[in-house]
Image (cartoon, rainbow, N blue to C red; front, side, top):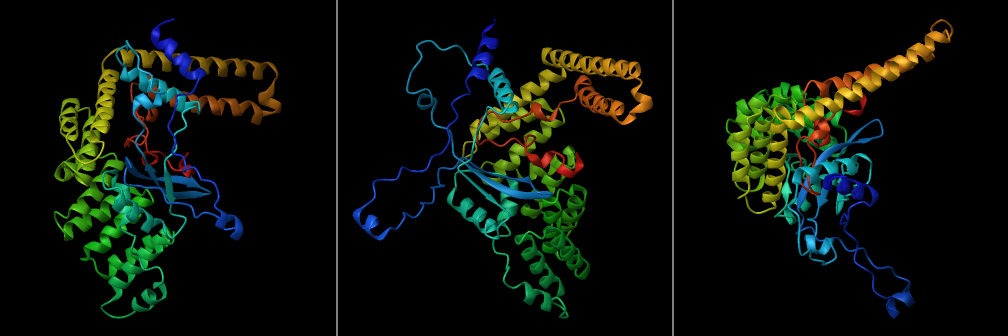
Length: 420
């Protein structure tokens, strides 16, 4: 058994030590507390050392809800290993480490939990995101968190007044804009999109109306509509950085990577959201197979401050290397062979069932039971054909370490529950 196979076997047998934040230990109760029966007030965790603030939609009932996770950095390696130092340490194979993590993630043994999670099922969510962003000033913040924080000051209590003002001459667009913002804050996203569209009709030259309409479409993952609305906003307010960033994200999700590259390049910088734009620029270049240009941008990203951008740049460099090898190299041949064997195994299993069904005359008596495995077989073949063709699968990007964003591993790029 090779060294890499031994590592994978050990990893499967014993899950890796994943650091999880724990609440501070409660001290012994005081006499006063015992006499009065009062309970200690829970202490809010300190978010200032947060590594990242990441926002994505997650399934909730029949729809989706925005969730913002606050991640802390993992402890130093010496602490994770119990302070033991190895005299001789073999060179680290980062690609093999990533493969092991992906294996553990798929079988449910890689359990990583954020320090805190805020979700949009409460009206306080938008303000909580803004406060977390203000406290965690050294954290990596994705573009979606910035968009969510923009609704922190929505006037939810004034919904009735906004409806009344919408009927007044000259105030219709502004009143509808505030009404739509309040609808977003209380979770009525569909109503908010309709209100923003009415505001855009009332004042087609209002850039804020078009921006909010585009962001509402983006939250609903209506990417084509988001692109159209944000292009209108950019026409009314050229070179507006907030609009360009939102439009770049919409183009990225619409898989128009060339247009996203141009917009992200305008916003790329060395700190804050400009560093986020640079990382998304590198991802857009990588998806266009512009390997060297992507490496160049990631080299600049290493120097971004503040934040753990060096670790994110290294994760993305590994992803660029894997992508290049998969397109022309041993990884491509190995993956194609693996997918081919899966496809043949599925086809063989389906053939056995068809033969059995014919032998038992199921197609004449119980056609519904005989057709079910054929339907499942078609689904398996459709999935494996993509792997055989050489195209990258969604699970082949992934995160290298907890708290580091991967723009192709987030639920923003996955189908909604209703689209499966």
